[in-house]
Image (cartoon, helix red, strand yellow):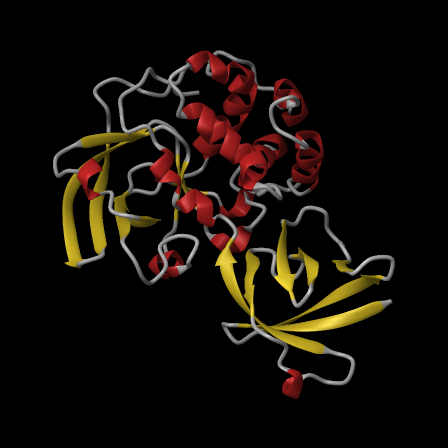
Amino acid sequence: MIANLCFNVLNGHDYWLPLTLNTSDPLLKWQDPSPLLNLRYIGLSNYNYKINFYNIRTLAITNLAPPLASTASAGEKRYLVCITSIYAHRVSDMIEEPNRMMLPIEGYAQQPLVSLEKAIAPLILIVPDIERKTWLAIENSKTPADGLTSGESASIMLYSMEWNKKEESLYYILNSTLRKEKRDLLQPWFLYLKLMLTGLGKLPSIIGRTFFRGVKGDFSKNYQQGNKIVWWGFSSCTSTINVLEQEEILGKTGVRTLFAIESKSAKDIRHHSIYPDENEILFLPATQFEVIGQYQPSKNVFIIQLQETEPLYPLRHPV
């Protein structure tokens, strides 16, 4: 049985998505025309729906109002939905940074450049479902932009993917490992890091522009003016400050901290992301910043200005 639901998204656009009704249990399951797309689960009435982002691949449905029966046509249901950025967690994960100096990230630069399939082989027991996700990335990177090879582009796309559970995503596990003191834990990642960083190195560095990150809570004490700090993981930012208003990042209420970051080496990965409309900006791991200043425009809002700087000695080996 095929049905249609019209989701009236808050920005005013309607998205029509096909549904398959499974009569053997009380689940409505979305048809999945593309297994590349992220899946989230939400509650709707007394049932659960499996959401397929085929037409809204960069959005996650997070909140639903009761059906708007008065505006629905016969045989249709209409729901009001809120939207959020797929990479919301990455824009706010600086709270997981160790806030201390650690040993440099090294060992990968001496590795050979290999195919993505070979690069992820040591990660099969570390990252769930990585072989299937790798295949999907490769299938979508056959005509890469910016002079990258298909393998280099696919490695970036693989990083950008969100698993059903974010804790199982490649980016989450990789960044958690980059932030640990035990550098030997990075060894299984060497081939992948060599491939991905080689690809990122071909993208032009963005110099002089300001990008944004945000997190709930007051982190001003950790970022005093004049201090130099290092973010050891890959650091995602946005060029559009209103993205941070999403509840998963800053929201509009409560105590929250906004970072305004002047870039010297950030990379625009939109042409190599599974979510190209997100316009994700990426700083490479072990990037150093200086705290230029702080501003508190209201009781609950803290703004921290950072400027990318070169460390005295390299913290990440060039490839």
